[in-house]
Image (cartoon, rainbow, N blue to C red):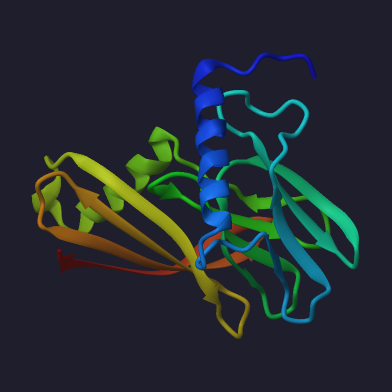
Length: 201
């Protein structure tokens, strides 16, 4: 590929590299790869951009392998936090820190290259989270959104994915926590149950 990386993309990649180098000497450095409980599957982030990746920041590649075979590659940035395989090993939920906040969650099929979910920090996705909070707590409908953090918390024995989202508003002394349970149906996440609460900061 002969595309030039934009200035913003170059800065993001440079910051990611500096963070990676700094963490290399840190006893709490993030894992370079993560394995399924039976060791037959692996996720890793390699510090190389995919051909055709977004030049504005996706300078790394998330790789999923099963039984030594590459199942899928996905453009990303940042580093791995943890990963959770479904009880039947058909799916893996990956938490990939990509910034100081936002959506860190990937849900990948381990039988093909299908991404059930990719991190989504778009305005519509963020607004959907805010709307859910405001629906339960309408007194905050005029509050200004600050930030959110979306992460997987594991799978239930029945194969449902639990996801926790923490959301805050400017000048509001509470953190809003959304605890969601999803099933995978038709290659998509389908919300089955949810609970929203607020906690004092």
